[in-house]
Length: 254
Image (cartoon, rainbow, N blue to C red; front, side, top):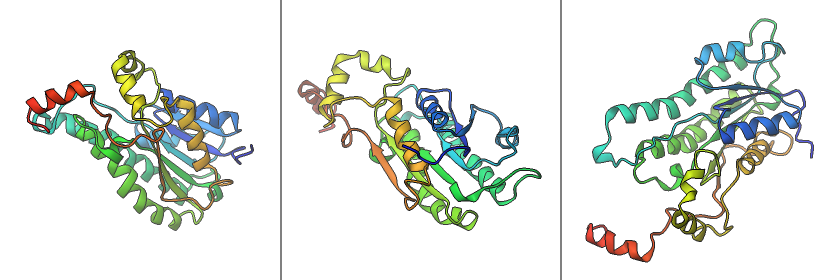
């Protein structure tokens, strides 16, 4: 199916990971001109993006982010961890989106700025939808992105690009390289699938396909301000096994 990406300039942040890589590959398969980025400074990022094509970025995929490795409740969380998580996941997205819009509003000399296919897709998380015990910092950042950031920016982007759209995809568990070791635990895998009506873990390509649909001005031209939860129907936290309830009661949590 032609999604209308032939020659469209796309920038994917955090493209070296499983989801970002899958998104980039799918855009390329559909004829897009894809720039990818890791941790470069935002200004340099956009100055370098698409230099060979003399074309400003039209589609921005905000995929970068960090997920702190350790489970730490708020009562024990250090301010340095909080600051870093919010800085990368939330402030980083603010800076990239701001620079993206500034280049659309005032294109560089010699660079084409086609506003007819402008779109932003945010990669959120079910953590931002349901919360994430032990990862309040991450949950807060993702919730802010896929709620306040998304719902406000949908009104602001049209001041620059009248057809511009902003949407979000919030994946649950995804079978990335980082997640594979977690599912080596058969108990966790069983409990996760038991709480998931579709009974499988998403692949990076599942997320990538949804991102392309939302980014396409051909099939999603009237879709903006929408957050799509991609979790196979899972709702909220994974339920504990029956034997876990005794531990919870002993800890005074039930």
